[in-house]
Length: 235
Image (cartoon, rainbow, N blue to C red; front, side, top):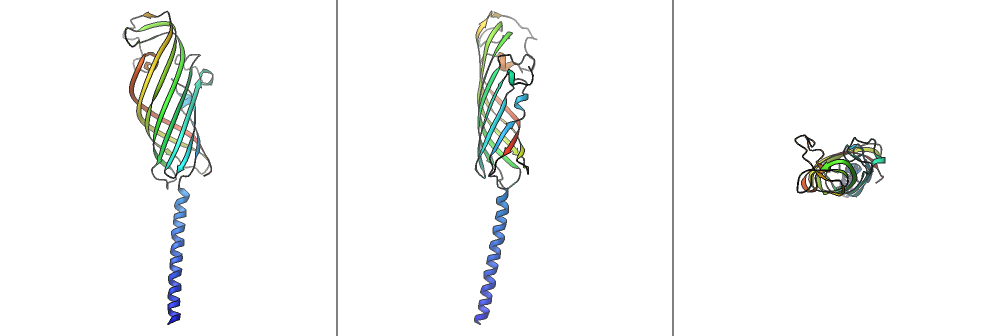
């Protein structure tokens, strides 16, 4: 009788141990896919921006499997640009930006990490324009021989993206998003200003040049899209 009880107890104990090992292995498999990585990044599209080319690098720091915090810093000038982009930028063109971001990983157990993020941004853009025109806050359009230009832009974006899984440390991070922005343009040290009637063909028909020839503060929507190359750090 005692022997039978001993056998039953031994079998029960073995089943408990086996169940524990199976559960532990399953948890281990899940943990292997958890995103505990941090990343260095470089934006592949910012340097090709026709209007405001700059180089943007960043760092994404892991907090836990569901949260990460990142910071992108960008800088550009005429010498760092691939081309002169026509008359979009002048020889004194200079821009820098600052973008902190908080990421929420939707499902950390998947290899490709989908996320939502909140990004704040500030952009400071300076240039000197020659023989152009601008639209003052009040009054008619004005032509000039030379003017110092400054643009400040700040706001926030809500983004959706993918950190695409790669067996190697190099991979891609794709994202898109919408947000709100405030833009403030100022023109100073204007030489030879003259009020002028530009007529119906005086400006860009699509409004692409508005960012650099409208004086004052403007509120509006902001669209973001980008592709980053990342280098994954060891977790």
